[in-house]
Amino acid sequence: MKRKLVAAIACRNKGSRLYGKPLQNLDVKAGIRIVDNIVACLKTIKCIDEIVLGISEGIDNEVFKTVAEELGLRYIVGDEFDVLSRLVQCGQLAGATDIFRVTSESPFLYFEPVEELWLKHQSEDADATYMEEIIDGCGFQIVTQKALETSHTEGESRHRSELCGLYIREHHQDFKVIKANPPIELIRRDLRLTVDNPEDHVVCRTIYGVFKDLAPRIPVTEIVKFLDANPNLIELVAPFAESGYEIMYHWGRK
Image 1 (cartoon, helix red, strand yellow):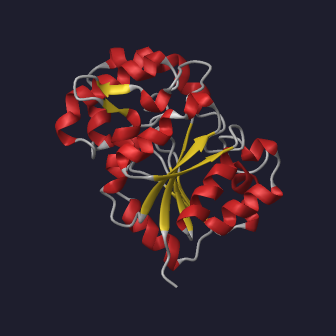
Image 2 (cartoon, helix red, strand yellow; image 1 turned 90 degrees about the vertical axis):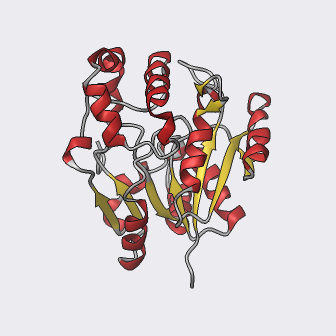
């Protein structure tokens, strides 16, 4: 049976620190939002068969239906807090065998190893393939539709939150898991490239302004070199970096 890899992006506007994170501009003049760059990058990855938005219920999120239509994507609307159910629904809508998971507020994907890891994921008959230890915001997961559904059925409410891979991490002995690591220069816990706070947005918008000629495939290695040459940007998000990594790559129960 031919496998179908579907990128599922869970979207909502509410946020305690920054409202409407996926819709924040990277380039105001060109009208490029965070979600635009994410989708454009995913569309360049040949092994991804379809991209589906998993939109949260609520009037605040109606705008994402328009976003989906603008970008030529299908979408589902589901429970605001049960993010995992939205990913499952995305897969069901598209007839996915496997889900490619990225977050909607992280504009710079570590895209280079995706195709190779997809082949490995299939050849080793893995339930889940995780890009580990990568800079916060640049990683991804490939998870079978079946493993996602098991996580939702067997898990608790905390597993159904935005921590969608937590059930597999805590029960990894029950799954076939591939843990992939990036080059050592991309293992940097002093950096973050995800937008949760206004300061994160300043950093990502600055990066996009410098590298927009390479967009949407902006290499994370080049971003790291730029940040190291501009330590003031690293210092701007330093207060948020440590907490973001606390549970991100943890395996087993705490």
